Image (cartoon, rainbow, N blue to C red; front, side, top):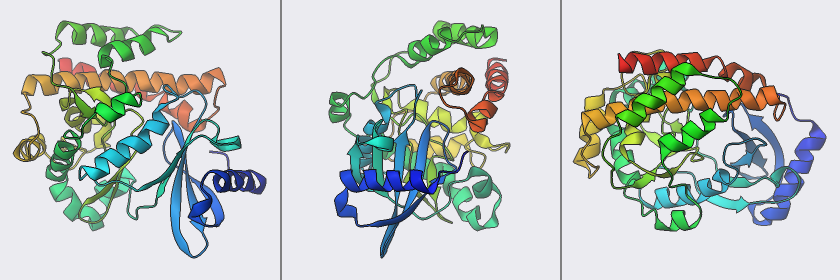
Length: 322
């Protein structure tokens, strides 16, 4: 990741001052090494707590997704999902032209490898699966109607990601095989709910004992709520650990907690279908991300490195099908 120049930082601060003059004077800004599809900045303020700025970047799959993040976080926070406070969102000049979300800063850890290894977070790990079940149950109670009016996607996930795969310049026979399996084994339709779409370690801020904020709503959509539970159990998001739920919990704890506080009943076959779908989707996302680098739309070592993970997603999908 290239380090921004002082001039570039000043241009960014001036643009923020135009769209959110009420936040007070910012003394500086630094880009955080978080996320491959959005820029995340920490803004230092004079005599006030820091803020976080999210910026859209060229070549993203859905250019309107970032602005919907603000609406989703606000709705989820009112439903009891731990969330940052959104202070401003929209578009502005210069670096804000593609869209921005300005939010409160939440103290805690977000790096999965630290969360999974540091003894400081042993208490969090012990109750993580159950905690996530409760959070997801509250999330899936959010009324999606206002979000749909704001453009929340409500299309078929398999069809949508299959279209992204079909647009790739090279063939990918394993992903195409997995897509065919998914089409043959679709579960019956579910009552659609607000789905986060990327609920996992890396998109949360945690303390030593609890999840403090759920972040990165860019893949949120209307869909089957079991998708969120399955995504949390995909091998890619265990970060090399054996435990089924994000490398630190069991599916039984996740599902029982989710159902006990009002979540829909989770059928094992439906969960497995969404696990396979999660591997397929992650593989296609990796293809899209590395394509942004290879096309020249956004040169990035991080995006280039994501390309190698296509094979991991294919391997994980085949293990599930076997």
